[in-house]
Amino acid sequence: MSNVAQLSAGKAYDAEEWQLRVDLAAAFRIAVEMDWHESVSNHFSAAVSPDGKKFLMNPRWMHFSEIKASDLLLLDSDDADTMKRPNAPDPSAWCIHGSMHARVPQARCILHLHPPYGTALAALRDPEVKPIDQNTARFYNRIVIDRQFGGIADDHAEGARLAGLLGNRNIMMMGNHGVLVAGNTIAEAFEDLYFLERACQTVILAYSTGQELNVMKPDLAEKTARGWDDYRGMSFAHFDAMKRMLDKKDPSYAS
Image (cartoon, rainbow, N blue to C red; front, side, top):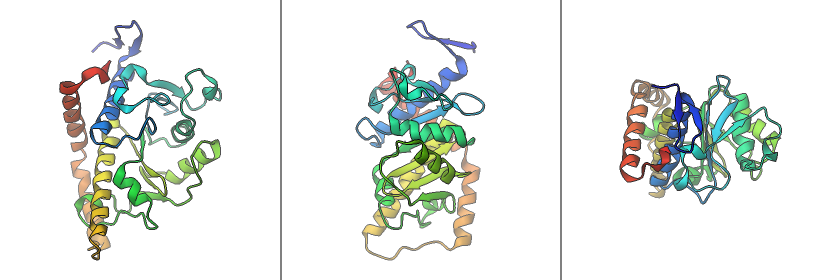
């Protein structure tokens, strides 16, 4: 593979950055297919530098269904003038993603959404993903819950608080807000987001019956959660399959 990916518009990108752009753009389009998008809000980002501080993110107020690889902003969490640039990102996106890429090294990819079931569960007094089947048990003791919602996150202090709360975890249930998933790669973060939303759907549907939940005992829940480690390769197979679906329907995401 060439070290440079050349676009028809004449702008050249490093091949590794271009692949990240294509994959992140695909994630936006797949989110639309899953009906996880919300107006022109919510944001995904992916680090391009070794320290994670330089990262790609969607432009302000652009619908997920229209985002292409070449549209993504290249931002630097150390750049104090980011919000002064003509194409400044959404303030809440800069608050959350800028702070996390600066402070949370394992968060190479950060996906923040308000998907239906995840948000519904986050709105409950008890937003815990109870281990009641193998998908919900995937997240047993692996989610941090934010119970300090204070309104739209659009200031530096709030971004720092959320980054500190995430710590060394990869998944956050954001009370009264939504969900956030971080990962080492776009495919792995997306897979966790996929299963998180499925898990939240299962919990909400189970609650809707009015019957008592059959919650796994701690040792069984932990055993099941660890069992998922052997299936991490699914992340890449699933993401590649979803990109092939996009290629058949509308390959413009990769331009």
